[in-house]
Length: 450
Image 1: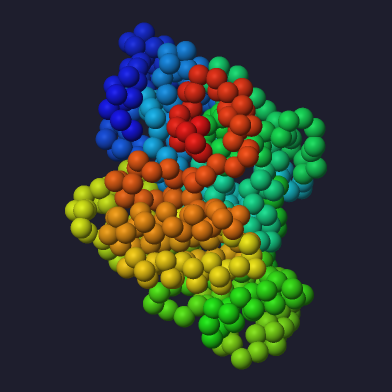
Image 2: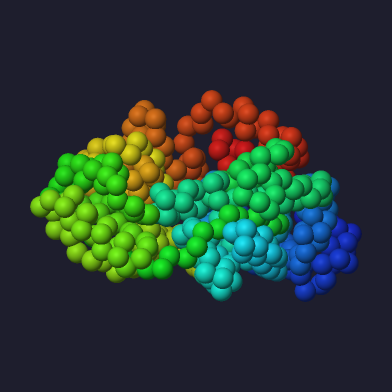
């Protein structure tokens, strides 16, 4: 963001502050500190409403004052997307942290946006249920944050993505309106599908205050296995064979890197007898590939990809120091991208990544889900990382895939995180204008500056 845009950003007037203090309380209207910066952009105020009505009123006042608002949950993914064009007010949802209703007989739950995923799962487990989701940093990530970033892991193979699990939502619009869509039952088709619309919108359309999800029972038992194919080609064949088989697996992922041979992890859930049958079938299907029982920790692979860089931390949750900003230009830095490709082209994608990275002297690790989504960690000099990511994005987009840069060195902030917009861009801009005409919420953070 250039200095002109930052200096043009309005400072909330004393009168606005007084109004905010009047209904939020002085303890919940605080000057922003350097730790509250969003991708290097420094806000001025941090607001912490305790109810959805307070949140809507605070958002309305900020909107009327022409201030840019950045919604924040646990802050674990605050660096995703582009840096905001402006950031005047951080609207924190941490105090909206209640589980409002667990209708366990109907397998649904309604929960406020600031509730952490771990707290939600612990509450649901008391009735033997769960939200069948495995986002990053569940101990700090909040319901509103994972919805805004559409963050899900390997379990989406069996249970679907967040757009499949959410059935109702309430959001605060910049004009102070609290809009609700969906319901509290699993089958609900009435009205505009606001739940799916705000999922993955990065908080650019409204601030999520609460959401309703469909639930699933906790499994009786689980077993994980790791498989070691001979090469990339065998990895692809085995993944497709597993997918075409009668195995009732709930998660399936493949690991690729410059240093180690490819490997596959598979997860089963059920009764002991059922799991024994699944294991026997898997051994027959895998032929000569080595199979070993694995620890449940293999399903933390995506989180480990973010935190295990050899040169420097690749990502920090909210409040932690951004070490990458202190690196010298000739030092090694890190980047993480989310990629998508066809499920039948996992091996081809890994091979292209290998060739591209080797030609630029960049180290790489890749975690691929069989849904075609993958997480790529790169390490190397910043300019080599930039060239590598540019080349990879171009190739993935030519084949109908995508590459979104989720973490990058500070000097990359001038480049777009999202890639080339598709045909839906005019519609996306029209929806943004309809719900947020003054461009108050997270301006510039989404695709093509939305």
